[in-house]
Length: 188
Image (cartoon, rainbow, N blue to C red; front, side, top):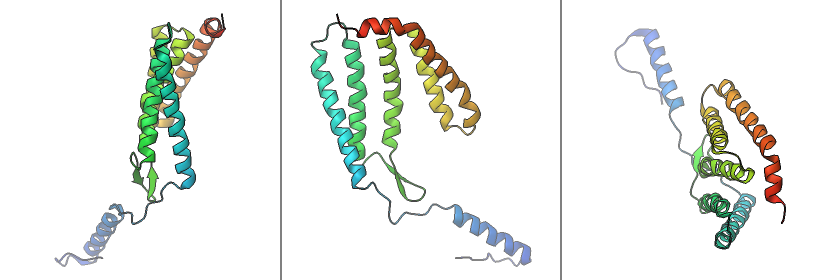
């Protein structure tokens, strides 16, 4: 509803007042009366992912006690699968989301999950490949920089360096550690 302030400042002032009020109303957040929620297919996918990750977590927990030299790998996998299980449970139970423009569900729990589990995945892969700590830290740092760059305003410029650095580190990891990985995976 448009209302004019008293003061009789003429047509220009009245136009400015109308424009200010229209701008304020268009920028004001609107409350969603209905939210487009996940359908039955999405709930089914969340349920399957939750169950699979829960089973994987239980399997890793049960296997860690019998592992001799590989406990660190099991612990990494327990934390990765366990955190992802909690994330999927939060999404499945109706938490871990917010309404975004267009009144749609946005599952921020998945992005919190990625910010925790991605460095753990890189650590696990680096440990399996037998990489030194500096290389693992460089890959994790490049990945963290990449995720931070994706959230910045100058994303197209700032994404190129971390992406190139992460790619070169991955090639370095695969070239230098290929023989070590083959020896570690092969059966005795």
